[in-house]
Length: 322
Image 1 (cartoon, rainbow, N blue to C red):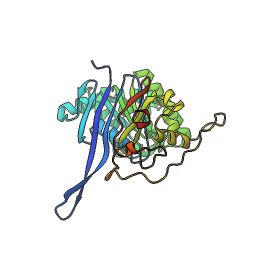
Image 2: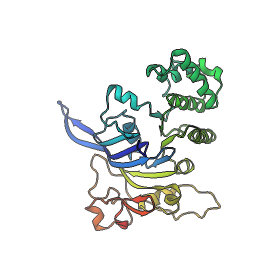
Image 3: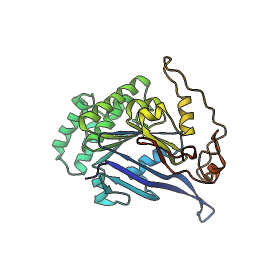
Image 4: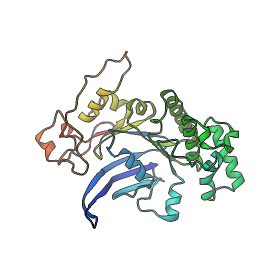
């Protein structure tokens, strides 16, 4: 058995750009361009970055909702990169997803009980009656009433619907849950409730999370390790305490300088990045961040930096630390 629940190796996703009457491919959007990381059992890895950096595409590839262009995805030691049919269904028993929009992620024509019981019935894990009993138990687990099992999604608030989505994700007893912006559509007070629920469930079921978010405060609250993405690349990855206390990559430093902090904490010096994020259809040569980096050197413009470990388990891809 692998020591990791999830292993991602040099993962890439290029979307073709087509033009003309015959829709010929004239280029590619490099949404994810060589990302590598791993997640241990019971661990939460938070992934942060600006919109369009590829973090959601990475999550969807791990769930095989999007087919990777290159690289490897291993769940519990098994390569699922090109899995199909029964092998793909089996992999999804070990990994489930909680989506960003609690309104769109539930079928409005299905009752809550049907939505939660469906994966158990489709995978032939339990009979229909036992699946609905399991669904009732899961509603109780996520803080809803067992009697809610006959109600429909439109009868619930956004926070309650997200609880239902979490219950559905738990149905097959997965080892990994990919949470893609799972609280960003909720009110701040409800966000804290859902985050605390996720943390309680993590300890109760020994779950591992891949928690994708643009909110640095949320990621700091829930994560054990944090990975920072920029333009399809993982530029820094390390333990939460180390990364927030001593960010190594200029991009991470700029992100943290813009994040609100409690008044009792001395604020970081604000770093204002110049220019716009380059297009992933035409990324810059060398380091992808050099066009906006205040500390860019000549080597940054020509050579892609390799990840180096600066602190224990704290990696950074930057020529300043090469």
